[in-house]
Length: 211
Image (cartoon, rainbow, N blue to C red; front, side, top):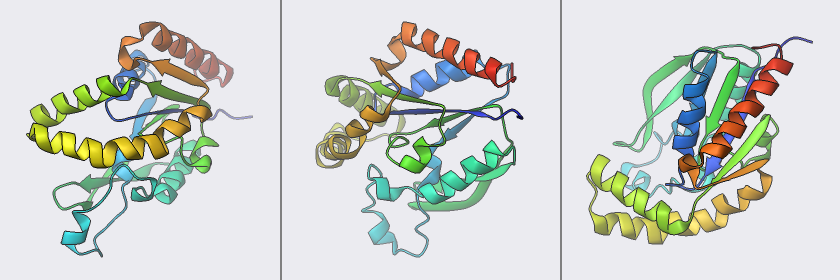
């Protein structure tokens, strides 16, 4: 039996710290063959939708994602075939004409708020993680990020959180926690959980004759 890439799914709400957990794991294995595949790159192409309508896009809803393409690309990578990852342009609310060539790796980290929502994606994962952080911390982190990095006003961040992010989290993101093999409380601050994950990944890599 030939070696097969290891797929690690990392989900959690916006501001949960899943990106911090992802980076910690990625950095640890950086010397090895590892790649990051973000669900955010796989929002649906909306070039055939009028711009005014695109402005209403709910990016926290499962239907916003092109999971068919994501699954196709993940299967290609599992067969050690390269992919052309799409690039999403938030300025025009549709897919850019650019693509990013990604070469296959031995470890694939699939990260995104809803990567555990689709059973087809879950079936391709070796390890499923859910980063679980209290809502008050998530909203504070989102505020700091959006105001600093995206030059949003406090009012607009709060309005979006209350009207879209929170209800979508409660309806779609939070329920996927039950599919996780491991739930990591407090995200990137949980160094014990991250160390345990690194050890588990090493074991799988050794079993797959990758390390």
